[in-house]
Image (cartoon, rainbow, N blue to C red; front, side, top):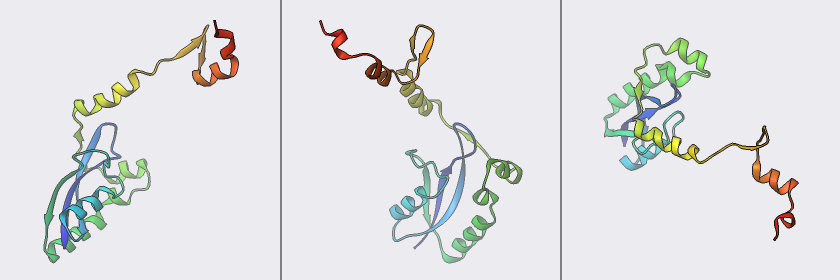
Length: 137
């Protein structure tokens, strides 16, 4: 069957996305959604990356294929090309709740200093320069 899948696409800036519709041939809607999720530039890890899946007839499918082939967003090879060719993109901002997950993950990481010198890999440094016997009491 032929499907029209609306998905969130990325590579347009930090915590931003665009919505595009892509044509997919699959045996079921679930397989169509999975195929669209694995396409390049789709926000793969977002739970709401696939917005909508609709069954379409053959003329609508081939119309979507033509639109997809003519869309410069899907044919850009660099960010400079994308900025030059894709001037009409409508951007959406991610919700702040989604971004806090990334902020919490980095909150536990602290810099490790010896005197004024920043140690890049503290565990490796301690294993290399300090013996565990020195600290045995």
